[in-house]
Length: 303
Image 1 (cartoon, rainbow, N blue to C red):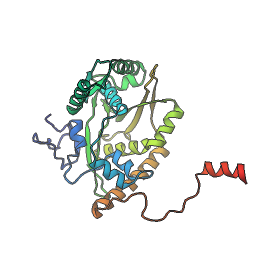
Image 2 (tube, one colour; image 1 turned 135 degrees about the horizontal axis):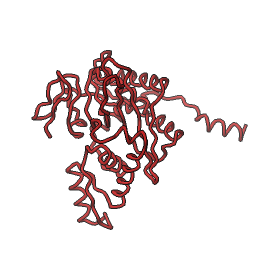
Image 3 (tube, rainbow, N blue to C red; image 1 turned 60 degrees about the horizontal axis):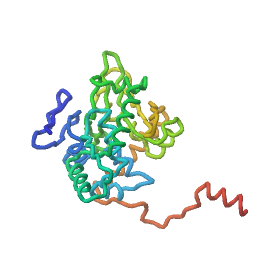
Image 4 (tube, rainbow, N blue to C red; image 1 turned 180 degrees about the vertical axis):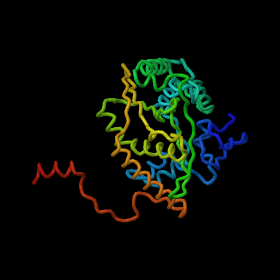
């Protein structure tokens, strides 16, 4: 796929292969984005979260170096994105009762090697039903209205404080008229799109850190213009019927904490790159108490 810039004043990505040396908004394939086209490397939101507890830099480095194995959970997420955004890997129906035969395994490997997603018929029907439920939602349907936005643009910028190159790839950026606020949109599939379920997911996966990261990129590149502060909304959709949807914008305290986590991650990343050392959880003997819930349980039962 040829790649070109979509921001005025930013050089086009060379046809021979992406090499990003100037901040900007670029069009490129997902594979090109994940290959990290910044000479010397850049940090994504996913990487920033992987650098911090409960993970560690050693796990981040391992994931960067190790080949990724396909998992059905990830493939279904990619498939849902494809149906919703019209971008990404092709969805290939493999209409066979069994996927464990030698012939079908070879076909699956061929599809995945081409960067596409194989799906059984029930899974494909599920993806179509999810897309319809999303289109019928009064807010999400408008946000993702075909022809009213741009899918999966790649943002690249340099953090002024640390000098670290950063990247992000919003799922969707709705078009905006004069005076309208810039909104970046991220779509996630989940098992529980209730407010409580979304809160748990945000805390567990650091989505407040992701939101703050993408907002920082939009500001660094001046995408919001002279208008209001840019916004970032999550669209969560359940993977079981009736495929309920929640559209969520995190509050200011959550974004502030997310930004603080990002600042720590940028510092850790810079230190690791400069030293060439990617530490694990700890190099020392750790003095640990019981988890609070276990301490309370044993105290009540035995003390």
